[in-house]
Image (cartoon, each protein chain N blue to C red):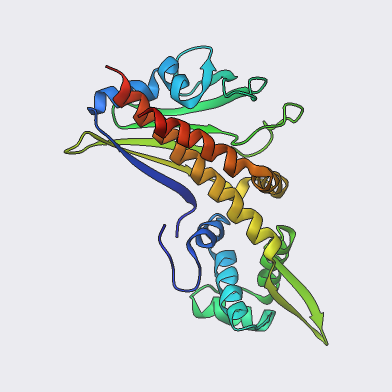
Length: 121
Length: 150
């Protein structure tokens, strides 16, 4: 499994599975910040997304964050006047476990196919 | 980073033979552990029963997408539809693709499954619980059994 700079392999696949480039950027940013023990504001996340060439309003970023929160991939909490975000280990763990299971399933299925083909006459 | 799971294996047999094992419904069923009612036909639904010990009560349903001889075999399905009381047909399916390629040794098989962003969170949680309950260990036993046969 290939590894990207900030993320381990399993997680990278899970993030990719989100299927949306902006949400993946948000998760990548939160993962990097999390490694430094930081939380991210919507401001900060909007700026990061802009730097990656995606032009979005604050509301659009908030919407993507809400969707990620519903999936328990991200969690937000009020800190004073603003809402700060971080990765939610619950959803991230579930997603990783799911994809690892799928991956292991195919590895075994292919193993049986090989056995079947090579074993017959 | 891609939206899919991908696995490869090289098999010491000609492409034609691997293709046959992959797309002949009866042969497919032998290694995939499913008893199918009929042959695979592009654009049609393939139905059968799981033959995995302990899971024989489960139906197996897939919609065949493409059959490009000796190159590509693909279908959509609902992975891990393990609750017989639940209707999975309203969920978005994932896409499974098998690609074959001739190599010096024989045949390279690449399987990809994509579309997991559409698998509902509840199902992921279910898979997580199954995993925690020793799914891994059970699968390891089977793997050892298969490898031991060699």
